[in-house]
Length: 294
Image (tube, rainbow, N blue to C red; front, side, top):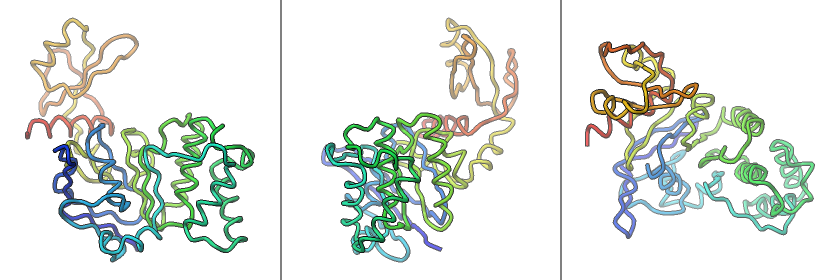
């Protein structure tokens, strides 16, 4: 069993922004979901794990190797799909993936061809393998990025917002692919899409402002919120009053009306109804409680 251990990682950029603040996580085999809003520090943490930048303090070890002291050892075991994935636009999907496989160290031609073709099949790109990657739609390009991340049978796979730009069918195909490969490797799914984490990840963490503010099993975290959530449909004109008088964790439109979700250990009455929590409610509640602690 491989194991990723993140100890006391902090990172401040030259402009003074502290992107990571004493982050600690232990991630074992399987899918691990990392949720957080934009600016939470997720991408900074992913780049640090991927050895693309160094932290200011702390250490990260994977399968017994220190990633800063032995970065080449980690890179040989790493598959990485960054949030922004660039391509050579005029090269065909097959030729580009084949070239990337060579860079990854897959030098046996037959083995390389077999793996490239298999990944193009898995990501539903085989029929367009001779087409220039520059002609691909956003979703197709994202699937190509996923294919390159899986080259070389990596033991550590980092996916930063991987389902962005995928339509529902592509997203479903991608999630099924991840569930197949995650059994014996560490897969970190960094995203702001709550459903991706709930569908795939037995363990997760939520980040905000560079810190890990919550960690656990999605189902357990949902259960811990039962009995503390209430909802009510209100008018837009009264929304400011409810935000002032209650701990409103989220608002949403429902059939054209405004529905508010409120955190309270007792029934706030005033027409509120008990709410069965979902992972999205866990997410918003954790952000609210972290804000209260500041």
